[in-house]
Length: 304
Length: 304
Image (cartoon, rainbow over the protein chains, first blue to last red):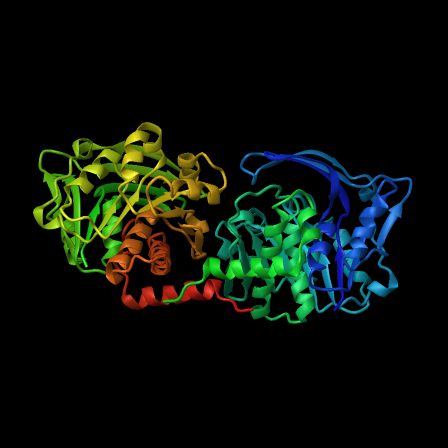
């Protein structure tokens, strides 16, 4: 089934304790699309890049079943650029550069053929932009998932709260869940967030896994303990891509199936962090994914 | 089967965002013993208290199948006292008072009847004391589990490394695993620690769960997301007590059974933090524990 992705397509430059990436392909939309591409073959992406964006990156997306008609190219503009440096504790990073460039005036216009997409993933962007995307849909998608971050809670909370009322699933990290709800306990925080619009809340805890909240139910998916986390960039977006890819593939938005989507998202994220940028995500074979899914089962399996 | 516990029996005074405990029963040995008492009825404890230690606390232990012959009472001395204050983020606490008192000269002498105990839990204490306990055993226990902390890595590393060679299971937290191994990745850290003596390593991550490492296998047990964490004091010791209680009850030291012990320990720890001190641990009924164990199953259950 069709999955529409809204998100940045960008250049990243990353430094970790293991080395420097140089200028590489990045952006939330890119990670979401590539992760989902291992599950669905009808992916559409809406984004914006500058004239400096190489055709090879667009070709890579096309090769991964991603329709790039919705990526607007502004020839005289420059592509969004982010540079960051991770500490030895890779949960901490310093942003070195954020050049919005063409993203500063991004006003997404959905191609006609995108407007009836069955599933919609709103990558982390200005809430008002996320809203304008939803408003352009001619058919209400079967599931809308939205990612956001503390930055928008700080500077555009009212807009954020408006979009929240329009979506089904919200993905944020634990600190953001606390900030949005004003509750320290994640259980209490989730209860509050679930009154703000979304029926499902996913709290991403990075190396500590992810929690899925629905009504009074909680599901916890561990992250895979890895020999080496090489570059955490894009892990959250990869998670969202794997999650929505699974939902779009199965067409099942039940809590039971959403648990599988969370595991799938976690598995995909565990690959992304093993190499710089999107490298691992573009090399994955179906058997690699199956093996990792089996490892996820073994990791938590026990029987009294 | 018989479980021997070595650990502090103490007074604690705790302040959390939810209130103050006043001077209450505490100590690693106390938590370990009470947690294990829900599973085994032959528990012996070796510790030391002062003349100020109320008989009612000893009676409480006896009521929970804990033989207190090994608790030496020094009438002219004062009981070990610890006071601490937790931040709103309860992973952070400040120690306000540490009065070692009678603990300063603690030199455990095992009653004759304790020396052939089948299972041994060494609570967090000076490594040289832990060693002297092992040396007094006439029969090598079927499993020795040892808890320790960064403090001993800082000031008594050589002693610590010596005891490590004598034990089967080590329980430490994630930062301690990193410090002991010099490796940031927990997978690499575990591999290194498992060359130092213990066959099993348990890495406690508090609200983020616990990892069990054995050979090249990893098992992850989630912590239960709780409505309210009231007082985290004793959670790690409760975990160890539940863990060793399960092992002593089943008499099975296989990796498969140790996974169940980790779940049991996590379940018991999830109770301890719901009230001040040992309050919840002494009120638990078998049906409460069974219900919590069921919740642990549901929390991570999924099927592709």
